[in-house]
Length: 217
Image (tube, rainbow, N blue to C red; front, side, top):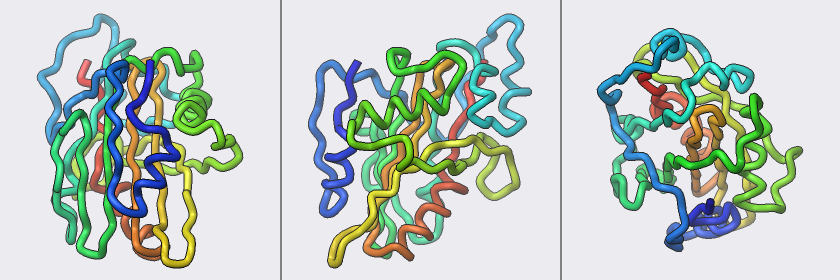
């Protein structure tokens, strides 16, 4: 199992344009979609009940095994944002009028990184895999929307955030991610902005508009 970019490359590339290095061994990406897919049935599993409430790290095992999560394209509807790449090699990219860039990806076949019954530890392993220099103490807990509609109150899911910091004349960067171990998939959003204030605003937009889409079965 491999990812097409290391975290270090993503953050370094954020200072200009992102650099894509295709990896033929990379997991197949899941197509992002603004709507839920046609549901199928997993016996004994109530997907609607799981989607209707918050999904903290401790609730990761409430998902159906092997059914991937998704990401909406709601950021394109946020004020000042526009889509500049849509599901190209599994990645969607958005540009904000103030110069912020957001890149969003969903990947499957993430089971080798998963820690059974512990999505937080699994997400730490994801960050370590992307960049071994990222220590657990560098990561902070935040949330993104968990389904619902972006213009209405709704449940949230916990994610981990790595803040890349900034330097004079450089970009302010952050990466939000979660590995859903039971689902065998992960969501990954990188942000690059001209300054810390712009990054704070962009993170708020992502948290409200770029919905993590719960599995439908």
